[in-house]
Length: 276
Image 1 (cartoon, helix red, strand yellow):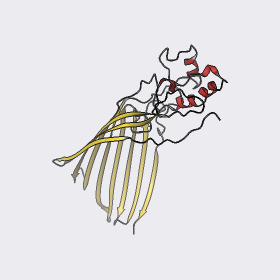
Image 2: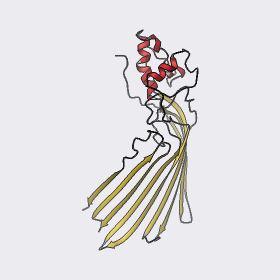
Image 3: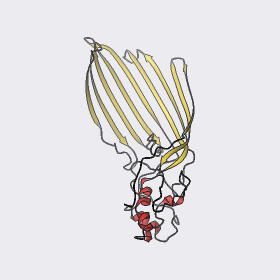
Image 4: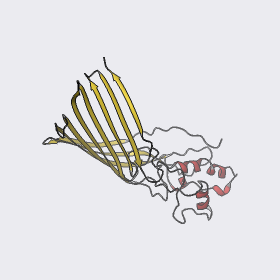
């Protein structure tokens, strides 16, 4: 066999953070700023596959024209070795990066309002920055929906056929966007309670909306995927805090190209609960 894979659990990831919470009138505010040092981020899986097979075919002398096809040759891996990997050597599939994250949450309990017995609104916004983000022309972080390699700047490869082979092995260039240095999005939540709507039955209605506004975080952070949106509505009927029936509708849409694997996979769920 040319290659084998293994699960790696990087150690010594330092986390520094500060958080706060306070009330201004009837509105609650909370926030957090965190800094992660040497956080492992996944390298583009296409480049790992190129290192795993075509590069090893070249090392074995079976396809010498594929030598240098993997862009791991451009970098130094976390274990200090060159990305150039020979027979019997190990290539880390991740890069260590410092990341910054900030988030802010605002919530307000309105009490009886707009025909409800209690109304709660909550909003949260978050921002992520990969501080030492690699030049995508040199190496890319793994991203959802990127099963091919992109078109690269001229002269990326030293050989005259390198770029053509790089694209040809992945059946043409990737058109979906890769991870970005910065990304942000927001979440909204509304909860409305209606007491004793009929014969001791209470109703709680909950609606959520999520929007990843700009940028895509590298794997395995899975925080934001540009232009991805989702929403849900849940209606829960409760009788005497003993019987409950919940019905929900969940919708997913947005994303650029085919990056959002859940796009248009809406579903309905129904749940019955009995407590004793």
